[in-house]
Length: 143
Image 1 (tube, helix red, strand yellow):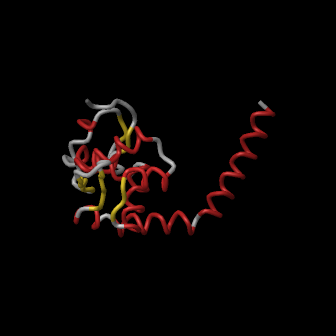
Image 2: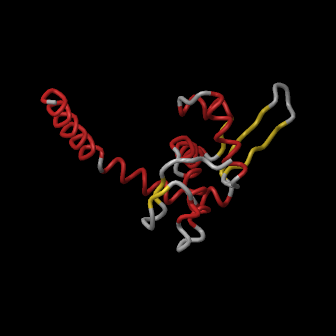
């Protein structure tokens, strides 16, 4: 099911359908991949599995502070995309472990760089947000 809305396809065009960007035949596929690997929970799951290598479902849930439903959905999508492997152990109680696949491991470096950028720029982002909030609060009072 295709989601409608505004997107920016690698700076080529802004619109509501990928068909509007024939100069970039792979943009739709890139958009799909970035939507998966760029979402908050996917990135945090990859970071956790990078750090601990293998985690059980409840360990991930506890580390991330994520709902059971969201964790389940995100893990299924990451498994479907080949980034995470799921290992079921037939013991009592049943045990399911998650770890990064080779493809998932190849995603560690970009995630690490993105995380470092976020940490390095927290102060600048906080400052920009404060400036924005002050400016917009004054504009709202004046208007």
